[in-house]
Length: 151
Image 1 (cartoon, helix red, strand yellow):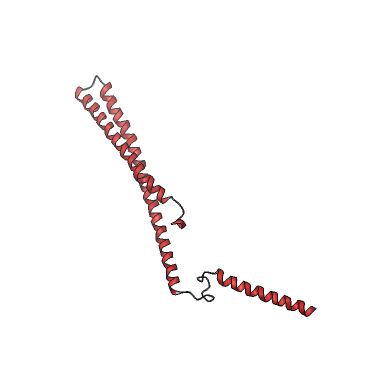
Image 2: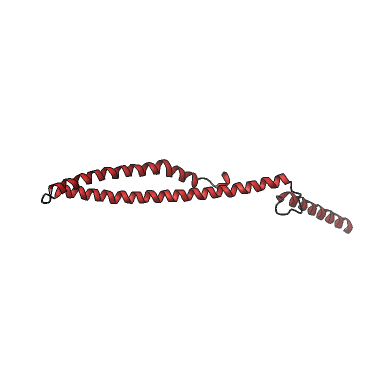
């Protein structure tokens, strides 16, 4: 009775050890333990190509993020330029329309310059809006999109 119980335990342990060895063999990818699995050369080359592709894709995504940050900086500077230019154009226009005591030619020139500058600033504003909506927003969506593993 004792020997049959011992045999069944030994048989069970042998099965468990065999089962663990099989699980271990099939659970590794072959790249962690090259001594336990013979690696197919083509498979290794494909794996290396995928690693290179992943690395280059990550580099491109980082480059896209850098471009988005630079373009956002350009739009931010443009908005500040528009703000300052609009204030200056309003001041010129106001100077031309409110100063009756000064030289007539200077008043007229300041008023015309202020009006022209206001139109230019509106064009800059339109340009910034178009740049943001048609270029930066799609690029931002692409760069900040889904995880790289989905690519």
